Image (tube, rainbow, N blue to C red):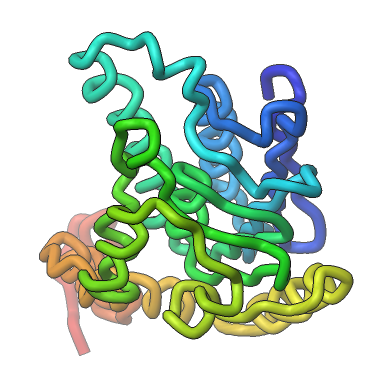
Length: 256
């Protein structure tokens, strides 16, 4: 990892990415996105890791969004082809991770920070946290698929409210809307998330992976996920074992 803006550790089957650019309210830079992607790649490869948490070292912000000092002077073409494209690649990788992911919102998640939280399967928040899309106040939009992911959760009406007004909502309101799973007092948040992680670790790896892919199929309608699921089912069958063995032994397969 470069510098210390992104911290990463894995212990006891739980990986944790900590946003640690506290002085800048965890405003995301391209370098930070690269570091997040490297951490997610390790989670993908490491079979010992069962759950990924994303949390913050800042008492005020989970993440305040994309760093306007970095994207503010980018020309319009590079804004789309570099800044937005790279962020979407990283966020998509989190969203498509076959292991459960949890956003721990001990503080507010705004703009790109809210979009980052929306990539996770589960979101647990402090009652003091707020979430929202303030981009309209600086002449921008949520560019990292936040509009789409939020609409999948709450529908177009609520999504328009957050995007057009640009006003954040409380954690309790976000729970009522179905954006956040649960809001608890700040001093109870980490113990609540730890309990959720322990529950997930006890569950079937296969069931969690297949369950996540089924949900993605329903959300996106993308047929590639159906093919992924079908291929996994076939690979798990005795026929697949026999087929591979027969190929390697240069004989006809005997399916039962």
